[in-house]
Structure formats: structure tokens, C-alpha cells
Amino acid sequence: MTQTFQTWGLSYEWAWGLATLAGILLIALPLMLGVAMIIYADRKIWAAMALRKGPNVVGPFGLLQSFADGLKVFLQETIVPSASNKALFLIAPIITFTVALMAWAVIPFNSGAVLADINVGLLYVLAMSSLGVYGVVIAGWASNSKYPFFSAMRAAAQMISYEVSIGFILICVVLWAGTFNMNGIVMAQKGHVFGLINGFVANPLLFPMWVLFLISGMAETARAPFDLTEAESELVAGYQTEYSSMSFALYWLGEYANVLLMCALNAVLFWGGWLPPLDLPFMYIVPGFVWLLLKILFFFFIFSWVKATVPRYRYDQLMRLGWKIFLPFSLLWVVIVSGYLMAIGHFA
Amino acid sequence: MIQTLAFYLFATMVIASGAVTILARNPVHSVLWLILAFFNAAGLMVLVGAEFIAMLLVIVYVGAVAVLFLFVVMMLDIDFAELRAGFVKNFPLGLLLAVVLFVELFVGLIVRSAGPMKLGTPDGAAMTGVGQSNIEAIGALLYGKYLFLFEASGIILLVAMIGAIVLTHRQRSDTRGQNVSRQNARRPEEATRNVKPEVGQGVVL
Image (cartoon, rainbow over all chains, first blue to last red; front, side, top):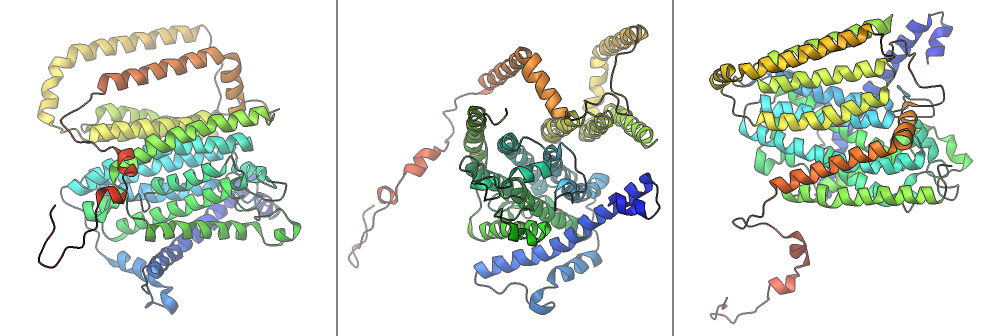
């Protein structure tokens, strides 16, 4: 895009600046629209599985429900509890929202269509997702209220527990791909199995890692069945209890942007990202970002499906799953995968 | 130009947030300022072309270590009067620390006059060669040249971890824990029984 701007007679610096700004808007605006629609989709799927109708009043089929909700919270009064730590109370939702958007900078939407094509892309995603917990923890502490505080404690422990195994899972992918660059990882999956199927998931050695990644992703984004941080039967609304108006809406947007990011990571790391599912010439007629979008929507359906059907974990079960099952298993798998790659001379 | 601006931005932020870390009254604020300092230090690392170290700094220190700090500090019951009362008692220790730090700074200055170390520069002159990324360069060093030192540090950390577990672990007999494998192994037919009592007879439990 920088070249396009340069052909308009701009200097390299200005062209680069404009191209980056345009890239940010091209990602952030559709993402926000997507989040609004995905909240609607989530509610519809959830309702369908509970044999309800779901939102169906605002607009055709209730399509405008999210926008109506957005307008409603926008017009509400922002309530700041008098005993809270005001500055931190207001910064916390902004951190959650900003970090949720920042990680999207390295997601490749097509060959070359990536905002920041850095060679530590995957580490950047890990770094940003580990920052996400601060929004929750700071909110819990700054609210100066019991239930948000419990929620913050849970969130901190939960995120750290699952990040460890996510790290090991990603190492397996990186070993196979030989790069941390997101586009490089996508390209490494081209014709991965029999030169036909695009995606690490069809590889029997990496399939268990994908299953682990999907479950860890749910825990990392605090989605059901791991939504202990906002378990309404125990903690009112968790860290969001004291929030209202736009600061509350920022949590919602940030949370769903994070869920979409997790879906996109599933697609990019294991399902071939913007590549079509099969490495056949006619499948490349459909543009790459459409394939990526379809995969993201597929994974979002799985997330919703799980939310609608699986009961919430107990907290000690959550910790046990993370530390006693996922961690040893993924650690063992790193040894197996690296041993196998060594044996077949993958690194030669 | 923009590198210089970014360098001064990051450097100022590191120093300022570092200073506020020790000046802030509230320990939680201190930790949050410390996190900001870490984050800006990562920015400096990116500037000198060490993006791998920068990301590790954010993942390990900001994402894990600082969260645990915050976790502990948040649970403190802060009594400001007591904090000030401890000032006189801890003053000699603080003074000692200050002297040690000052001497270190002084030694550092003397060493520096003997000629600067070749560190990274903001223009990226210290970047690894073309075609070799940060990760590859560090990997080749850690798993090649410094393999035994690397393994030794790993073993030291492992020993420290096991030591911490051994020191803090205790078998408690006064609490009722859950044995998950036993719970999973339990079958409905062992735990329940289906009876059809006669009307008016009831069931003997």
C-alpha cells in the first residue's frame, strides 16, 4: 500500500504513515462491525440451542440488536463508585479494549495483506494476549468491591495457567513451520498433508495440539465453560459488576474482539489461515480473506456451541486441567514433535 | 529522526515510571508503574533491533512475573501509618543499599571511561546480519556456543523450583480434598440403587 501512496507523489515517510493509518482503519473498523454482528450471532446460536427465538425485534430478524444495545449504553450515565480508585477504574476498560485490538496487527488476511509483517509475529500475539489480563485485574482492584476483587484473583491465576500450555502448543507449530512470522506459518501449511490438504490440523502429530489449543483458547478468553471470572451465580458479574455505560461496553467489545482473535489464531496456526482447505487451483479463485473469514466464523460457531451446551467448570477443576493435564501433555508433545522432526531431518 | 524521537520517548518513560515506582505511596500503583517501565524498556529493545528480547520481556516480565507481583500486592492490607512507622527502622538498610548502588554507578562510570562497550545503536547498526533473524542468532548462540551454560542455568532453575515446592508443600490431614481420579472411576451403579417400594412400606436406607 505504501507504493500506491508513493505513486501519488508523496515522500516515503508520508506514504508509509498514511498506509499504516489506512491499514489500521481497514482492520479496526470492520472488526468493530464484526464484533457487533458476532454478538448478535452468539445470542442467536445460543437461543437456537435453547429452543428460544433470541433477539428478533430491532430491525429485520433482530439484526440491529447490537447497535441498539450500543446506543443504549452510550446514552447511559457513567457511574464511578465513590470508594473506587478513579483513574485506574476508568483506565482498566480502555486497556482491555486497546490490547484486544492491538493483537490484530499481525494477523495475515492474505498473502502480503498484513499490517505488521514482523518476524516475531507469534510472540507478539502471545505478548498482547498476556497483557489482556491487566484490564480485568486492575478493574477488580480499582472497583474496591468484593466480587470484582475475587474475579480479578481468578482471572490472574487462570490466564497464567493457560498461557504456559499455550506457549508449548505454539512451540510445536513453530518447530514445524520453522518461523515465528504469521505469514510464514500460513505458507508452511500449503499442501502440508499429501501435498493436498492445507493446514497443520490434518497432521496426526499436530491434531492433539489443536484440540488443546481450542480448549486453552476458551480458557484464555474466559469464555464458557471457563468463564469463572464472571460466573453470575457466584460473583454477580465478576470484574464488570461496578461498571456501567461505555466503560461496560468497552469490556464487551474487547471480550468479543479477543474471542474473534482466538478464532483467527486457530485458523492461522492450524487450519491454513487464508489458504483454501485443499491445495487445488480452482479453490484459489475465492480470495484469501474470504477463506479466513469463513474459518473464523466456523470457530466462532464452535465457541458459541460450547457456551450453549457445556456447564461451567469448578475453579479447582479448571486449575487441575491447566496444570496437571494440559501442561504435562503439551510438554511431552514438544519432545515428541521435535524428536520426530529431528529423526526425519526436517531441520537439515 | 523518528528513531531519536522514539528513543527519547521510551527512555523518558522508563526513567519517569521507574522513579514513580519507588515514589508512589500505594504499592499497587508502584507495581503498575513498574509494568509501564518494563513495557517501555521493551520499546527500547525494539529500537536497538532486539525484537525477540523485547517480546520475551513483555511475555515473561509483564505477562507473568508482574501479574504475580500484582496478585500478591493487591491482597496486602495496606496501613499507611504502619508504613511510615517502619521508615526509621529500615533507614540504615536503605542507606546501605543506596551506598552500594552509588558505588556500582561510580565503578560503571570509571569502566566506561576505559572505552565504551559495543552495544546496539538506534540506527540498527547492531542488528544481526541480513538473512539471519534475532531468534536464529540467539538460538545458535544458546544451543551451540553456550549450550552447557544454558543447560546449567536450566538445572539451577529446576532445583530452585523443586526446592520451593518442597519447602512450602505440606500434607494436611485436617482438610478434605478431592480425589479426581477416584471421582471419575466411580460408576452410577456403585453409588445408587433403584428400589421400587411397596405403597406404605418406605425404604430402609
